[in-house]
Image (cartoon, rainbow, N blue to C red; front, side, top):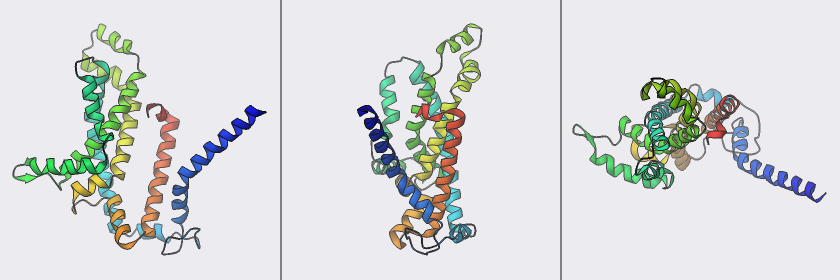
Amino acid sequence: MKEKILRISFLVICWAIILYILLPIIVLIVNSFNKSKFFEFPPTGFSLQWFEKFLVNKEYQASLLVSVKIAAVSAFSGILIGTPAAYAIKRYNFKGSNLLQTFFLSPLMLPSVVWALGLIQYMNVVRIGNASILGTFFGLISAHTVIILPYVIRMVMTSLSYMDKDLESASLSLGANPIKTFFGITFPLISPGVLVGAVFGFMVSFTDVVVTSFIGGSKYITFPVRMYSEIRSEGLDPLAVAVSAIIIIILVIVSFICEKTIQWSRYI
C-alpha cells in the first residue's frame, strides 16, 4: 500500500511538472484564436482573423523567410563542420582531443550576450576586401554556426557511440579506403544523429535573438528579433502570437515524427 501511494505521488508530481512546463505554450496556442486585439486569457471569443492577417502581412512573412534562410544555411554549415570534428574527437585518441572537445562545446558554457560581444569585436577586425563582415549575411551565418556547433557535435558523437567500430575495420580490411568507408559505412549508420543535430541546430538558430540582434543589425530582421522589438515598443501583438503558435505546432509535429521514425531522444 505504501509503495502504491509513493508511486502515485511520484506520477502526480511528474505530471504537475510537465504541465507547468507546457502551460505557457498551451496558453499561447489557445490565445492565438482570440478575437481580441489585446492579450487576454481566457479568450473572449474564437477567431481566425490573426492567421488570415499573417497571410497578407509582408513584414512578418519577410522576417520568417529570413529566419528560415539563416537557420537552414547555419544548420548545413554546422553539419559540414561538426560531423568531421565529432568523428575525429570520438575515433582518434590524439593529444589534445579533450581540449578540442571542450573548445567546441564552449558556446554552451557562456551566456549568449558574452558570445555576441566577443563576435562583434572579432568581426570588426575580420574583413572581406575592405568591408567588415559585421552586419552581413556571411557574418550572421558564421555567428549562428558557432552557437549551433556544440549541439551538432554532441549529437553526432552520441550517434557514433551507438555504432560498432568493427564495421569500419571490416570495410578497411576488405580494401576500402578511409573516405569510402566513411561515406559507405559510417555516415549511413550515424545519419540519425546527424539529422537530429541538424534539426536542433535549425531550432537554435531560428529562435536566437541576442546574437542575431548584435551581429545582423537592421539589415537582417528575423522573426524572433522583430517580435522582441515589437513587444518592447508596442506590447504583445496578437499577430505575433498567432505566428508563434504556427511555429510551435510545426515544431511539435517535427519532433513527434523524428521520435517515431529515428527515436531522436536517444541522441539528446
